[in-house]
Length: 335
Image: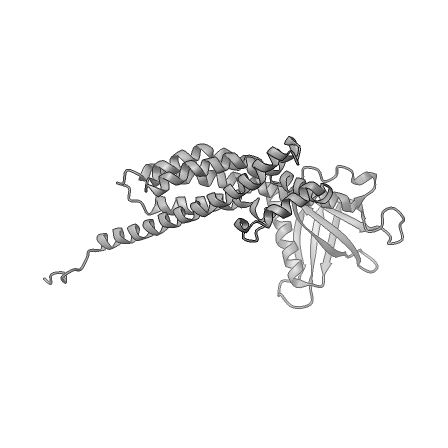
């Protein structure tokens, strides 16, 4: 039986060595990026939040809406960094998890913050001059306030990736394994909640935009509370006559068909009149033709209890997107 070559390591040792290399690399990345993150948090806290509070350029409600819990997030980073510098990753991240709710609060305030910034830059000349002056400081390196405000949410995603990598590359016998695993789980759960908040905010923006496009008494409150999926022009094929272009708005529970208002309409030009709202839970969908992916487009059949729609597009790819979105909406209502 041959003996191992001098200096050769067994597979278990090789595996552990890879763990250690990945762990060391991840720990170093977490430390270096935390230093940079804290520096940028400090710039905003020092040159914007603190000075605006002292000068009174913004009223307290506006300042709070603009920055949210920024100073508390900065304080949480200041607590975490010494642990990372001392190599106490598990203890540091475990303590940091007590501050995760700040990131949820920050995410819930993002749209309000963006609106306040745009409004104040537009109408408050003292604030606008102040922002330009602060952004011109060499410490900011050309970064603008609007570039720095999303930092906490970007950092939360980094926290998740790095905490998970640290936990995965820490041996189960390590005293830090339990701390890191728990921290990674809590950070991931928070990141998911923040993602959900972001999705809801985007959906609300879509609903507001669509509501503004719909005119007439019938359209009021029609889409409130719905989940937007897609919109676009499709041709409605009648039993007789030529196909008619209509704008369709697809939500998770309904398909809205709208007709454009006449371009010469004095008050409602550029808007759409709602013609029908179809419940997706009662829809049966079939692709009549357009399976081959050729250039000739295709035809979809949508059957409801009291009506049948034939929808056509000359763009095969666009029709396929509609087919998949409609299928998703139907399945979501039947689960």
